[in-house]
Image (cartoon, rainbow, N blue to C red):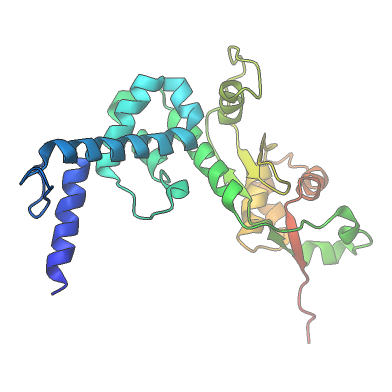
Length: 260
């Protein structure tokens, strides 16, 4: 008994997202046995709604490539990656990977990473609230004790690494920074977080991404510093630790268990 509804739902969804598909069997209207015109209007409304959801989540990507290009790309994406959840705030998590493989966008190799940043920004915005710890919680720590502590990161924390200056590109196209030629074209690692009501995006210093990713993976602070130093010999632990605390990224401190 359950096979028929499932089969109908699949054919309905397929027809809804593909204009070359016929109206599914079983769809009728009071004034037509096969409501082709009405279904076409409904199909268009769904496509427009999903495109607007993507526009809302990826405004900088749209600004970079233009409204017409974005609309055409979004239509292809919608057909290949229809929503799997009624929560449209999460729709588009796969768009960065889609852009990376989208042939018409290959001349903009940084675009996929900008999309990754924007997707992370939305996730950060909708992440759970948490009260960050202040610098006073770190005062008076013994040096050896500090190396062994683990940091419970704020749930809104996201890190996007890129060989392109994605933070600068995002800032220039979002109104955060004046649009101008980027003279120092180098990779930037983005830190996205929401310790306060507003999502904050900033570029991490060298080694900063490796440090935070190690902490987020559950490594103690000492080993996280080693991971950062392995990537960047000039890694500044004091400065990065101050930035970690000052940015409100510490939700809790987990102390090592005493040895028996």
